[in-house]
Length: 494
Image (cartoon, rainbow, N blue to C red; front, side, top):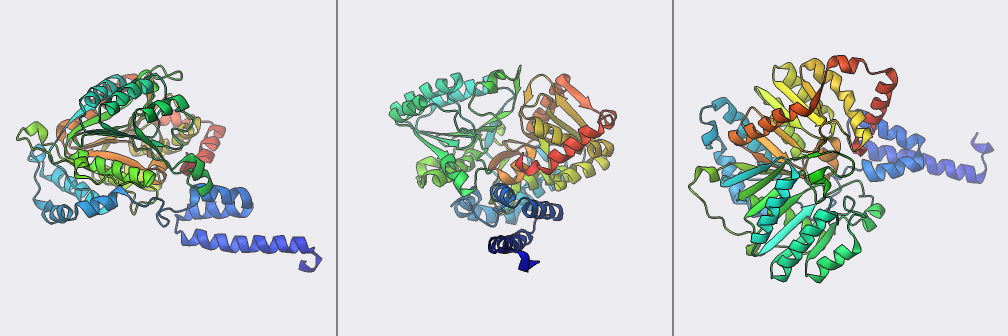
């Protein structure tokens, strides 16, 4: 047969054979899960050009290929090595006022603290107080007030920043602060904010002396193959004292719902205390990766005055991860919280496309008698992940879990509350993209009142939810199931 081929055919066949052998080796050495390995091999074999492009953008294991020069967990390790060692040594002796009557829960709390110490080099902070927000208007009004009070620096990092009505309000405020001598730095994700900020807006910021940078500039990421890896973080740091974290981006729809939704439901967290310094480390690291400038001056990491007031003693820890992290710390945190739950788990996420580990943890918890509750949006902004999520419903429902879809507006919050003792708020969705492909950050709060507040809001949201039952899932048509299952295969890209 080879003798019948023309020279060009023989050349192309040889190239294809070398391509097959080479890519097979690359995929096998990546040690992905067996089903993922098989899927990539078939894609690369039968769609050689398209498949290779998709693999470059979505399949490369960046845990083995460092994307950024510095990562927050590396800075934590350098700056807090002695504290990390002390907390590891004395972790068994840590006692919290909120859990003095629940010895069994202390064990679970210690596991979470130990996990983040080891995977993230993130230390436990004890001197904090907080304010929770469940909608955008009060979140942004409070943020404006704090910005007005800032005296030294304002650092803001958002996945999406728009030059809409809200964006212009903040532009006026930030420009006034910059002209008054306050350092203002803004960091936007290159893909998330692409085409959303006008030239006029950028000129105004520049004229006022505001520094703004693009994280993974879209002019470069499409060439480098990094366009699939997003900075999904949303944080604010003011004078190293006050910080914000949560699901809200800088855009009018995060207050009103915009043109697509009648309302917007989200969760944000204001922190006053030493946890702010860890969020400042995250910002400083991301700023360096975007500007090659280290914000290492002590003024960016001021000492905190510790108050004897019990309201200032809320234990918190930071969880952050990205595609090139040594460990997927936020996913591991969620897994740990779910699998170690004794009584109840409340999860809110707009999207639900977990990996097998998280799905199994949820099923196992429900089968073990834990009250597992999942709420996601019932008014989707993206149909594909909305449909793909339905492929997970049957097993969770059969295990005893309960699933709700929020109907009042778009539900965008990312929260988990476990056993009225631990809760987390941040930027990480309950999906593979957030777990493994995007740069995310979550606050973990070891406080009964905080965990109860997250649970209480979940229960209030139930008024506007439609519960999905096993009977509903069993009514899905064959076409409906085939469509959803096909989309589930694409879950890493969603």
